[in-house]
Amino acid sequence: MRADRGANPGADRSPDGNPGRSTDPGADPEEVRAAAERFADARAEADVKAVTLRPAGERFASVRRGYPRDTVDALVSRVAEALRGRVRLTPEEVLADRFDIARRGYDRAEVDAWRDRTADLLIRRRLDDAAGD
Image (tube, rainbow, N blue to C red; front, side, top):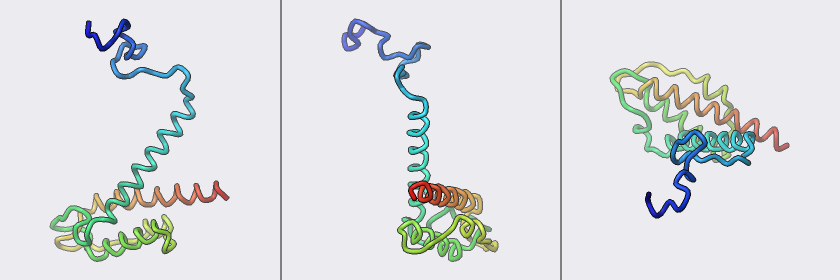
């Protein structure tokens, strides 16, 4: 038995015996769910913002046939301004933008996934603002 575990070697185990997964019997499931939601929201916002901080022309993977960089970069710039509170941008506007296909453009799947995350973020912000009123 290792000396640093003390007298109770199973103290850092959950009831099912898994190490490192101890549970707090007093944890409120609703508080845990709310904390997990806050974490997911913060992660989604960080992912969306990370794209806005990259240099234009380098925001997504480059592919032989994809969305035109200049058009996508214009949307990313509008999103960055909206996140700073300088312009109003709705989730519907983010999703309504349609892009042509160009040679040497941005990866369509990456851009579409980012647009979905951005729209979700804007919806959550709208709901938070409505709840705060």
